[in-house]
Image 1 (cartoon, one colour):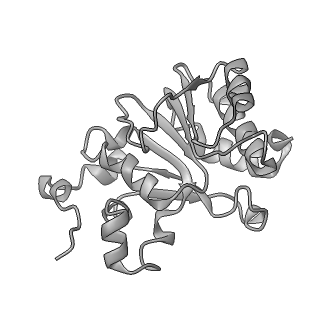
Image 2 (tube, rainbow, N blue to C red):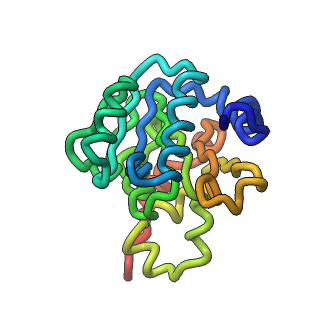
Length: 199
């Protein structure tokens, strides 16, 4: 069980308790029916909901989910998002976006609809580190496909999952990424208007 591992104890006790999300939104887990990795990722999502004592709702969407996957979600009282919102869900309350190994454009979409000083403080993302893309990809590709990842690296607080899980292809390269009030409060109004654009 994941809950009995040092991985979970370190991530939960040291870094997740303080987030206190109201809702969890799961994107890109895959099909639990067809993928062992998806089963582990789904299990972790359920455990996060229970241990964090989420007072709100848990939502899920992945276009590859089967009817059996959807039945499993309903059994666990998870609300299935009916339409593909492309990650563009506004976090009016503190929200943990659980997005293991999603495409970089999806992360950027989630940031884009919450790109102001008030909403971004409500966003926490478990997913690939943004700085994995920024600096390792051509700027013109980043600006075209995921423009919000570039400025986000300047204000995000990133806590990587333990190194012991780097080689397991399930939780490797994942991190908890938040936008602390102390980081956001230092920014002027112009920061939010500086979405990178192609010349």
